[in-house]
Amino acid sequence: MPDLIPAHYDAAGAVHRWGSKAELFLLPCFSILMTAALEWVSRHPKWWNIPAEVTENSREALHSVTLRILSIMELLTILGFALLEFLSMTGRPLPGGLTAGFVLIWMALIPIAILWLLRIAERYR
Image (cartoon, rainbow, N blue to C red; front, side, top):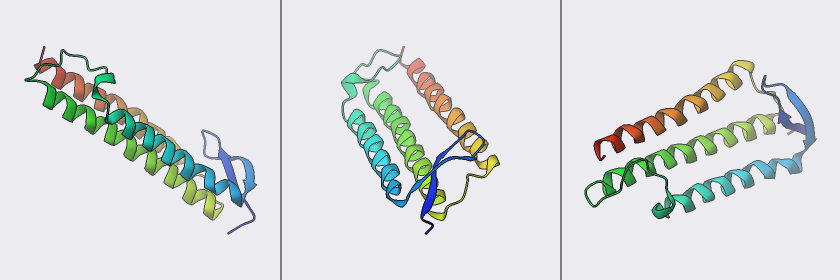
């Protein structure tokens, strides 16, 4: 492993800052914290902002969809940080196409998940 690793990337995937190997511990810590926060939120459905009235008939379906959305967010968080960690460990910059593709996937999956929840919530209005 190189002594200096990429520590920050810009939107084009170029390395903005180089850092020490000790910084490799930061991404897993951030990933664990973000995943734990999403997991914590998923266990408190009373705090969710569901765009429909939650009744006894709709509760199970709406909670199921919301949990799926939170699971998608957790998966994207873990995969994103794992990719950055791998590229940092190998000392390589992000491939330009990968950066744009990853951001587009992020920007597409989140609204798709929200629209999915809205569609299901519409059934229970």
